[in-house]
Image 1 (cartoon, rainbow, N blue to C red):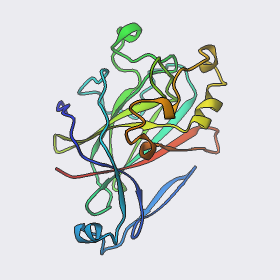
Image 2: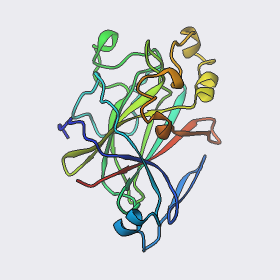
Image 3: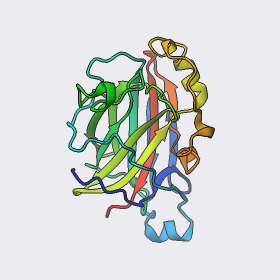
Image 4: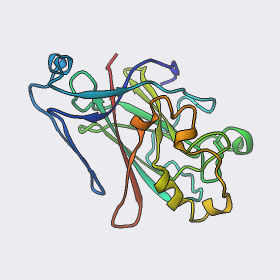
Length: 230
């Protein structure tokens, strides 16, 4: 998975027609029709809303470990990220896709860079999707850093190729609530919200995660991404 090329593949975040989604604390249910195929998508019988690719950014490190818990014990409000990968041509889940994520810690620091240079692994990891297209990560709610809104970077790898590069965003109201807690509250006055972020303005509204709290009080963020298989 060393291929870090930025592709122009689309990210599917909402499905209509034959595909119904229900996001909640328990997760996201996917139902598809046997008749959902490329022709159905092309005709509009299956409605797929695609968003542009977004920049990889300067903090990518290739060949990260396959692991679910990516915190390395660093502090922050617990976050469970649930990323579903589906075929943008058929709207069906893709099994065994490698979902690769990286983001800043609660203090706005990336591992491997700047003050985080002494550790190259915190808030980085890879998970493969299951039969439902689901990859899950245990992490913490990302911190902010100057000039950017809150986000998580993501790549999707299939067969050794990068088929999606993008960024995931959080509703500002949820971020406001999280940032009233420690350790985030020790760094007030974040300078950029979603609407003012130059990268968010290019398709970020279609890459917003849905966020709920589960019965244990953990924030659960859910997103669906559609990719072309090659």
